[in-house]
Image (cartoon, rainbow, N blue to C red; front, side, top):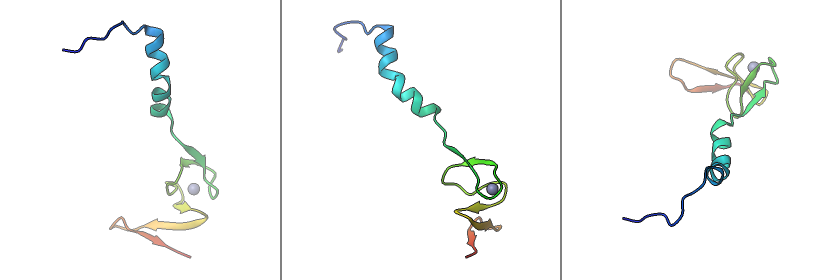
Length: 68
Ligand SMILES: [Zn+2]
């Protein structure tokens, strides 16, 4: 069985994992242009159903209907 040559200190371990911990916690929120509520980036607004200044309502089949 392979054994590490030296013990990795707590400080070195934390430095190595610092970037990956940031990526897990990062969530992209933006403010909706239509209703000014907080929504997920690149997602349809859950409050008003707008995306890119266009109404995109969802029917029962979960397929978006685009009104231009
Ligand atoms: Zn909205």
